[in-house]
Length: 107
Length: 459
Image (cartoon, rainbow over all chains, first blue to last red; front, side, top):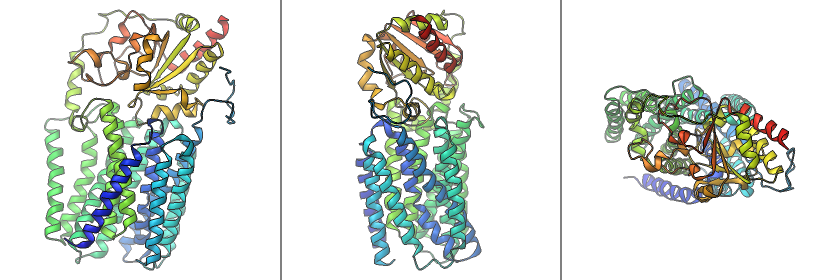
């Protein structure tokens, strides 16, 4: 086994562990934003597609890279935007709400 | 890889973890997302300065096109369509990783190391599996493909055999690298398996499937990291993978079913409907809007239980307006949110947040189940399985053991439902026939608006 693989496995296992710990603290309230947020983050595969699209290895490689860049960018840009759009909607009860809540109750 | 690039990736990875940590509370969540965005920006800019990149034409074209599509989808899509949008994004994620895998493979041609072959094979297999699986999930959610399980004899055997077969083919390529035919065959099986594996899964099980596809997309991204020696991809993939895994475990637990049962259990639910007695044998209380509004007028406290039906009839704003007019009368209103209500984790929370319901009025299963006996009226808006008492009493029921809301313990239950047909899960719900249950049939949104009007007239 190459040291490269072992090193990669170290990182993978530790990152999985950190991910599990951090994510288990996310309340069910935010599970949908969590999903779209991690989706945006996994759009980091954009980094791999950038190299594939720009390295000019061969024609096939470039075209596949282009499609991959497009798909990954959709996830990165769209993922962060929609997550933020969702999170903006979550608000607490109370007078602090500014977002045009009509008919505020006084309980 | 230059030290500067590695350093930039390290900073990005830390920011990604902080981004997820921000999501542990709604107050810090938006700050977290900003950190994630900064992390992504750093990683992309650093990569663009990478010396392997010669031409920027296709990169700029792809980034522009992708940004335009991504922005358009995010701004336009209604919140009720969030499960579809999540399924689509898994589909793009899977496609991107799979194509990077194929692209890398074509350029290595003959000379690939064992590690790279294995990682690339894994990456394309899971990438294509996620891609087609998510398209299927999207089709089912959107109603393009029947939401009912599609089954045939020996289906599980075929799927498991294909899965194990491709793992075997991957392993063989690690031992004897440089076999393009085998590589492409494995990718092809991944492509086909995505379709075949999601076909037998019913619409109500979508929360688990979507979470699982999330996890696969993460695994594929991680494998890309192994293939191209990029730590940031390994880390981000692992974060995504563990998030998907954790959510699928939570969802399965909330249905009291094992993974295996969700993935391979379709044959059980397909037989079930015939076992229920023919309709009409048991009487139910069909109530008019005014009858139900009368109950609400007398109530001191009300709990709303939303389900997928609320999303279908886009009734979240009407729900909030009803709650507001009840609260104006001094009634205490709470919302009971089941983990698997809707078609994805957290579906109901997002819809109610969109309708401006403060999140401190939303309660989890454990925090509200003891309140039902002290509650005057429960309004069930398009929920079914999550309020079915059979889950507690009837060991023969397919949903037996699933944690459900004890709505039947409250003084009266008002169920808003389109018709008396059982859903495609085919499970009969005894709650609908209890003496303290009132069935108000019809479109949930119209019924709720009717309640609001009736409450206004009444005082």
